[in-house]
Amino acid sequence: MLLNAPIYIYKHVFIGLFLLAISANSSGFGYSHHQDEKYIDIQSGSLLGLGHVSYGSEYNDRHSVLAGVGYVPSLSNHKEMMLYSLRYRYDFSKRWNINDMTFNPFSLGVGLLMSDHDDLFLELPTQYPDGYYAPSALRIIFNYQAILQVKPHFQVYLDISVLDVGFISYIREPEFFYDNYDFLGLEGVTNWGFGVRYGF
Image 1: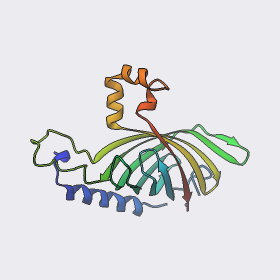
Image 2 (image 1 turned 135 degrees about the vertical axis):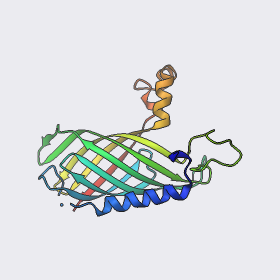
Image 3 (image 1 turned 90 degrees about the horizontal axis):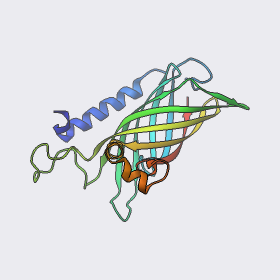
Image 4 (image 1 turned 45 degrees about the horizontal axis):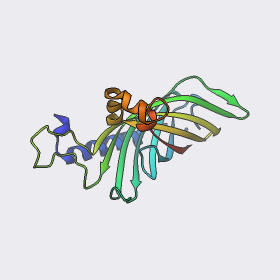
């Protein structure tokens, strides 16, 4: 089973998918024309670390694939770590023109997030029986973005995201989140951040 594969398999898969995303064809964002485009994406927060740099390709004005790497500094509750991501984003067609800018209020995404941290694992530590825990260093991340295209090649965005484990907890125990967090309890499972992307 894939979840029990050795760690070197995960690393090779991530490297292969990263190279595949980089090799995809592309040029300005699809909002202004219908060519595919490549871009650099820089984000802070929203479960991707203090800084997360991704290389992305957009197809048909709607679909984006990104591969990136991020950094989380050492804090009182954990050591520093690196984050690696492979993400997909779908931009809905609803867009509003604001002066010379374009606002896209609905963009949804999903991706894989792999953490490089001594306290997390892809291979189950030997003291646990097989299948006792799922890999803690590999997570699925879901996100929402509101995007403002400032110039033909430049966008800024707000990102709100949730991990698979947070989503599952919210579904299993909604009353706990309703009682202890605002916004229908979503404050307890979501994280937010900001980003910019430059197309070329």
